[in-house]
Image (cartoon, rainbow, N blue to C red; front, side):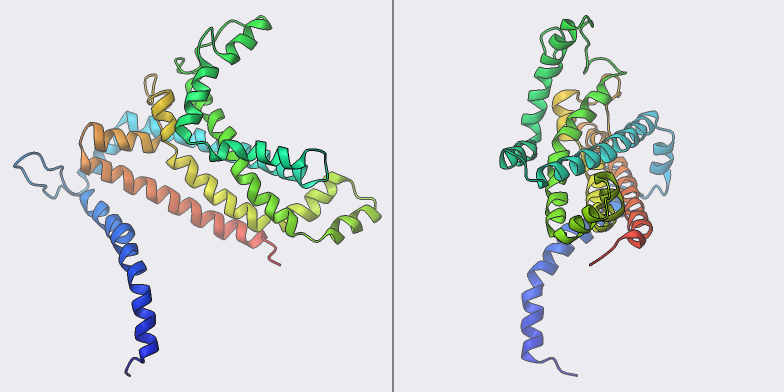
Length: 291
C-alpha cells in the first residue's frame, strides 16, 4: 500500500513535534532508567553496570526517606487545602457581588508572581522579631517564632506559601467550569427550596467532577515538583526538615555530582506520579459527569 501525498504531508507536519517529543521526553526517560543501573563516571573511570546497587543505597538512605515523608505531608496539606480554598473563592466571585472583578484579580495575582519573588515576600513575613507575622503575634502576647529556622515549623511554613500561591491558579479552572453550568439548575433548586449547601453538594459538585480530576492531577504534580521556594526560603533545612524529594534530587545530582543516584531518585519520583495519576483517573473518572 503506497502512501498518498496527503499522508506524506501529514507525517511531515507531525515530524517536528515527534522529534521534540522523542528527544526531550522519551529518550531522557529511557536514558535515566538505564543510568539508574550504572555507576557514576568519575574522571577517567567510565560508568559500569552495577545492577540494583543504587536502589539498595536509596533504601538505606535516611535523607531520602526523610524527603519522601516531607513530600507526602506537603502533598497531603497542599492538595486538599488549595483545592478547597479555590472552590470557595470561585463560588464567591461567581456571584454578582460588588467589586467582583477586583476580587478575581486579587485572588489570581499570586499565581502570576514568580515563585522566587513570592518566597522573598514571605521571608519578610516570617522574619523573627521584625517580620509581619511575628509583629502580629507579639501584639496578642505570643512570643516571636523562628518559622523557617525551627525544624517543627519549617515545613508548615513553606506549605502555607505553596497553598497561598496555588489556590488562585486552581480558582480560574473552577470559575470557568461554574460559568458553563446552566442558570436553570440554580433556578430549579431555588424553586424547590434547596439550601445553598445542598445545591452545591448535590448539583454543582458532581458537575464539577471533571474539573476536579484535572485540578487534582495538576495539584499532585505540583506538590512533587515544588522546589524553587525551598531554595530561597530554607534550602532544605534545618536538618532536612523541609527537604522535598525534588530538592534532594537536585542536591544529589548537581551538588554532590552523583548522576546515577540522581537517576534512581528520578525514576522513583516519576513512578510515584504515574501511579498516583493512574489511580486518580481510574477511581475518580467513574464519578465524573460529562455533559
